[in-house]
Amino acid sequence: MLGGLEGAGRVRALRKRLRTQQGLDAQRLYFPKRRLEAEPRSLPTPRFVEVMARSAAAVEVILRSGRVLRVSTAIDTPTLRRLVEAFEDDVGC
Image 1 (cartoon, one colour):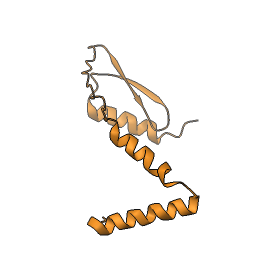
Image 2 (image 1 turned 60 degrees about the vertical axis):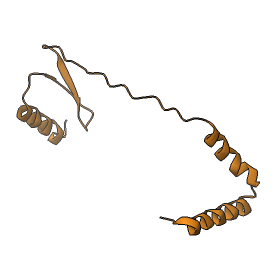
Image 3 (image 1 turned 45 degrees about the vertical axis):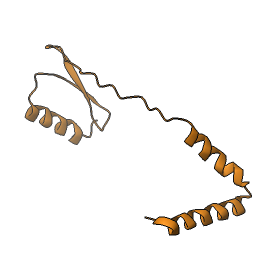
Image 4 (image 1 turned 120 degrees about the vertical axis):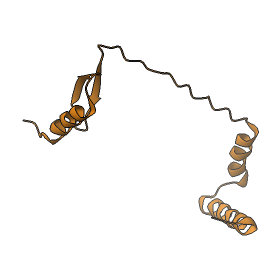
């Protein structure tokens, strides 16, 4: 990590080298920075929605192979794991 004044000096040198190599006007590099600093950054607050499965609902599991496995929500984890492993190991026809 760059520290203090030494880091700032390196950043300035990098900007100068970039301007020289690319033939850029200094204002073209600083204008977007000032504009971004002036605009308030308001990111939307993430919303979480609880999803409740119906008792007779099925769940779709998309495997790495692209196959879709539809199972009841009542399936137990070891059985589901065996099914997924069987379909993932199967190379198909």
